[in-house]
Image 1 (spheres, helix red, strand yellow):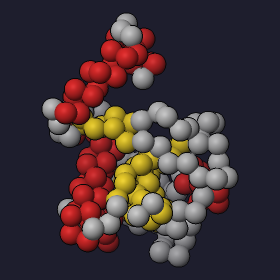
Image 2 (tube, rainbow, N blue to C red):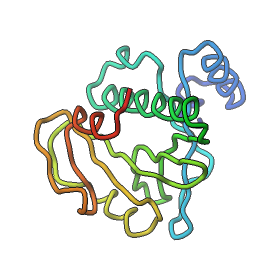
Image 3 (cartoon, helix red, strand yellow):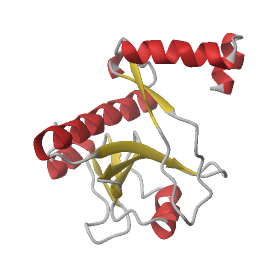
Image 4 (cartoon, rainbow, N blue to C red):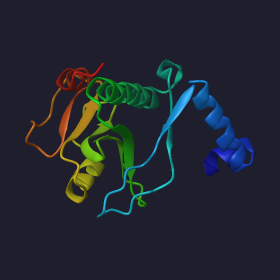
Length: 170
């Protein structure tokens, strides 16, 4: 919020009001952070995403925004069809390590997702948070075609289309 406030040369409360208005108009949405007991997690800073992710110009942020939209639909579908209290969050510590998304079901973490545009081995942040949180499954999704690891490995690295099929994402 502070960096956006400085960039726009507007008061932080004014920027907060604008973002709230954009949310009410279904232009954007924000997701809050998730904090574990064994990490120094950020507690207040929310991440901003657009409902129409196709308007994001850069490939990496557009892919992350698209994944956020699918995961948010996943949360809404489980809330509507099964009555679970679902939340979409992210995890970042004060040292800057981050995993893009954490799905909570009835207050407990279900899985975490890291987004990468290229096929890569599991990110160091995923392994770090795997050791220090009670998140049971970690996925790293990408736009490529290769799968690295298996369901028993620390972090399953797989194409986004395979991830969607595994979780029956909308």
